[in-house]
Amino acid sequence: MEPARAKLQRAIESTQFKAPSCPIYQNVSTKAELEVETIKKNLIAQLTAPVKWTQSVQHMVADGASLFVECGPGKVLQGLIKKIHPEAEVASL
Image (cartoon, rainbow, N blue to C red):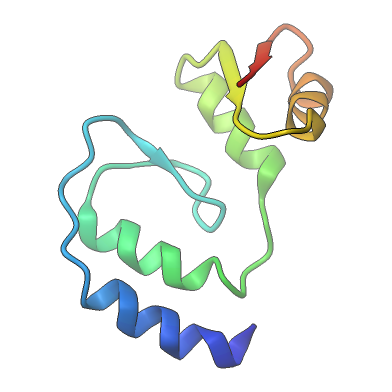
Protein backbone atom coordinates (compact mmCIF):
# COMPACT_ATOMS: atom_id res chain seq x y z
CA MET A 1 0.00 0.00 0.00
CA GLU A 2 2.95 2.33 0.45
CA PRO A 3 3.19 3.17 -3.30
CA ALA A 4 -0.48 4.23 -3.26
CA ARG A 5 0.12 6.50 -0.29
CA ALA A 6 1.75 9.33 -2.29
CA LYS A 7 -1.08 9.28 -4.83
CA LEU A 8 -3.69 9.29 -2.07
CA GLN A 9 -1.90 12.12 -0.29
CA ARG A 10 -1.94 14.28 -3.43
CA ALA A 11 -5.65 13.58 -3.93
CA ILE A 12 -6.53 14.39 -0.31
CA GLU A 13 -4.40 17.52 -0.23
CA SER A 14 -6.02 18.81 -3.42
CA THR A 15 -9.56 18.16 -2.14
CA GLN A 16 -11.45 20.83 -0.26
CA PHE A 17 -12.81 19.48 3.01
CA LYS A 18 -15.47 21.14 5.13
CA ALA A 19 -15.63 20.87 8.90
CA PRO A 20 -17.71 17.83 9.85
CA SER A 21 -21.06 18.28 11.56
CA CYS A 22 -20.38 15.29 13.81
CA PRO A 23 -17.21 13.72 15.20
CA ILE A 24 -15.20 11.48 12.87
CA TYR A 25 -13.55 8.36 14.31
CA GLN A 26 -10.54 7.14 12.37
CA ASN A 27 -8.57 3.93 12.81
CA VAL A 28 -5.27 5.74 13.30
CA SER A 29 -6.19 7.81 16.35
CA THR A 30 -9.38 5.97 17.43
CA LYS A 31 -10.74 9.17 18.99
CA ALA A 32 -13.38 11.69 17.92
CA GLU A 33 -11.99 14.32 15.59
CA LEU A 34 -13.47 17.56 14.26
CA GLU A 35 -10.33 19.31 12.95
CA VAL A 36 -10.16 19.11 9.14
CA GLU A 37 -6.37 19.07 8.88
CA THR A 38 -6.11 16.22 11.39
CA ILE A 39 -8.80 14.25 9.56
CA LYS A 40 -6.89 14.66 6.29
CA LYS A 41 -3.61 13.62 7.91
CA ASN A 42 -5.27 10.56 9.45
CA LEU A 43 -6.86 9.53 6.14
CA ILE A 44 -3.41 9.39 4.58
CA ALA A 45 -1.87 7.59 7.56
CA GLN A 46 -4.55 4.94 7.87
CA LEU A 47 -3.84 3.59 4.40
CA THR A 48 -0.74 1.86 5.79
CA ALA A 49 -1.37 1.92 9.56
CA PRO A 50 -2.84 -0.95 11.56
CA VAL A 51 -6.62 -0.91 12.05
CA LYS A 52 -7.47 -0.18 15.68
CA TRP A 53 -11.10 -1.30 15.48
CA THR A 54 -11.50 -2.37 19.11
CA GLN A 55 -10.14 0.91 20.45
CA SER A 56 -12.28 2.90 17.99
CA VAL A 57 -15.47 1.17 19.12
CA GLN A 58 -14.48 1.54 22.79
CA HIS A 59 -13.99 5.29 22.31
CA MET A 60 -17.33 5.63 20.52
CA VAL A 61 -19.09 3.82 23.37
CA ALA A 62 -17.28 5.94 25.97
CA ASP A 63 -18.44 9.03 24.06
CA GLY A 64 -22.06 7.86 24.23
CA ALA A 65 -22.65 5.75 21.12
CA SER A 66 -25.14 2.94 21.65
CA LEU A 67 -26.42 2.25 18.11
CA PHE A 68 -24.08 1.12 15.34
CA VAL A 69 -25.35 0.87 11.75
CA GLU A 70 -23.42 -1.18 9.22
CA CYS A 71 -23.84 -0.11 5.59
CA GLY A 72 -23.26 -2.89 3.12
CA PRO A 73 -24.18 -6.47 2.31
CA GLY A 74 -22.68 -8.24 5.33
CA LYS A 75 -22.88 -8.21 9.10
CA VAL A 76 -19.22 -8.74 10.00
CA LEU A 77 -18.79 -5.38 11.74
CA GLN A 78 -22.01 -5.91 13.71
CA GLY A 79 -20.58 -9.16 15.07
CA LEU A 80 -17.30 -7.50 15.98
CA ILE A 81 -19.09 -4.65 17.75
CA LYS A 82 -21.20 -7.10 19.78
CA LYS A 83 -18.01 -8.89 20.88
CA ILE A 84 -16.45 -5.60 21.96
CA HIS A 85 -19.59 -4.17 23.57
CA PRO A 86 -22.38 -6.77 23.99
CA GLU A 87 -24.92 -4.14 25.08
CA ALA A 88 -24.60 -2.20 21.80
CA GLU A 89 -27.55 -2.08 19.45
CA VAL A 90 -26.56 -2.99 15.89
CA ALA A 91 -28.40 -2.69 12.59
CA SER A 92 -27.65 -2.82 8.89
CA LEU A 93 -28.69 -0.95 5.77
